[in-house]
Length: 273
Image (cartoon, rainbow, N blue to C red; front, side):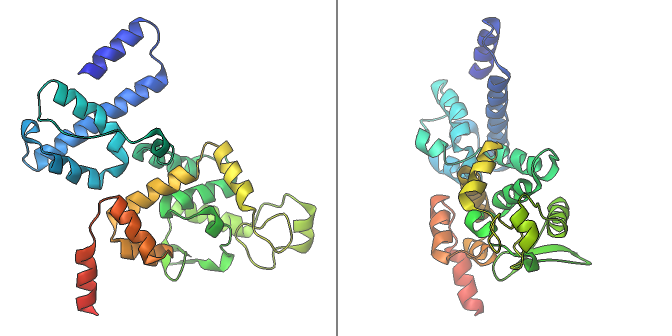
């Protein structure tokens, strides 16, 4: 593959970095995933149509930029027809994470003890449930509960099941919130905020929290956008709206962006009602 030959040329010139190797490896893995999907659907590469590519992208929307390399390589060598696929703009690149990066960052939030506990919890909630920081800092301790089946956090009206490691972090946060100011120690946390701020009776500052996460290599906007795309392509967007406490029209806009059609689900729900 051209990517491998290019890597060998750069390595021979001493310009092949670990970061470049990671990017090339990811491109190759995505190409393998795409070819496996074609095989599963009994589609030959030379017969692949633009509609086939669009179908794959619905379930792998965050890999749009990555699969371009393979498609261009295949088209250039006449292994397939002329598939029209464009690279997202640099502006959009900065607003989304690669799917693997999102999952790697989530694992870091759940497992990296060198990170501040509050940053780990907030970072995980963004990557799991696409919550904005402004809502996360307003969460109160009474929204967390544990029973014999597991631990739950109520984001809006309905509790969502938490990963065990995140549940332990939240329990530790409730039992011993960070006390980084004398004022907080003196006046306590009478409103029961999960993330109490320095000022008495107030949660953490939103801007300060954004800055902290970005400084720790846990970007907020791109992670939330990618988590939202994953949510609306894994669940009916009306369910996402109900669970995450967002307006249904917002979930629908995200679904349209991700090319996910949920009209059939709405029709079924109307019949059931």
